[in-house]
Amino acid sequence: MKILVTGSTGLVGSALIPALKSSGHQIVRLVRSKPKDASEVYWNPEQGTINAAELEGLDAVVHLAGENLAAGRWTDEKKQRIRESRVKGTRLLSETLAQLTEKPAVLVSASAVGFYGNRGDEILTEQSASGSDFLAEVCREWELATQAAAQAGIRVVNLRFGVIFSGEGGALKKMLTPFRLGVGGKLGSGRQYLSWIAIDDAVGAIEHALTNDSLRGAVNAVAPQAVTNRVFTKTLGRVLSRPTILPVPAFAARLAFGEMADATLLSSQRVEPERLSEAGYTFKYPTLEAALRHVLNKEG
Image 1 (cartoon, one colour):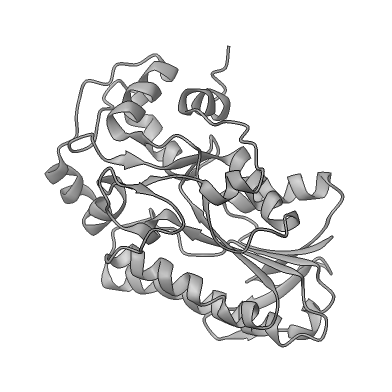
Image 2 (cartoon, rainbow, N blue to C red; image 1 turned 120 degrees about the vertical axis):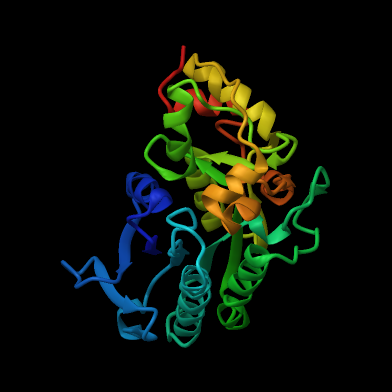
């Protein structure tokens, strides 16, 4: 297939593109800098500009672009960038695809389990209602921004990713330093649930969504076993052969990270990949310890 990818230099995009190329697909990157060659197309989501003519004849689109949640405190300006980078960019892309003469068959657009808000130990599936906090609002608007594409007959899949574990970056890399120094520990009560997915399965879920016609709408991209922060902490310590005896109180996390602490580190989402499993996806790393050992090269 000829596949357009946004966010191609991000954590997921960097792993996805080699996988798609190895399967024989032709990749076109939608980029915000001057295109280097014919494999890149320029767009500017903030200004609402994109060259639609260069998007004719695509078979599929994978939309991963968005402001990094974990980079810096959530000031009002940062929150606006988080929202607009997802909503405005997705709306621009969807409306452009909808107007093409030769439309792609499928748009796989990233979303997140932040859609559900802080839900304690409630088991969450794609049928569960949305939450009411900032991230839940962003995710709702993010998904709604794909409506133009869906209404134009493009099959749209909104992949609600959990925390993506990779040795190359993202949340896990930020956690490693204190754990390797032996000062890692549970956050807050440790009872909050973490829904996660190994980078290999994040890529696998995208590939499955591209080729499986039964998938459309919201699809949870999480491993089958959500774990509490306490279990995650003990497991990561075991994988790194380090103690995990220094807890981080909730107030300390809030002092360090502000609103982001409540929305991400202390929030609880126990999400199940119901639709992905029903569509026949087989997880490469369904259990936490195996996933962590793999991405951190601690296998064996």
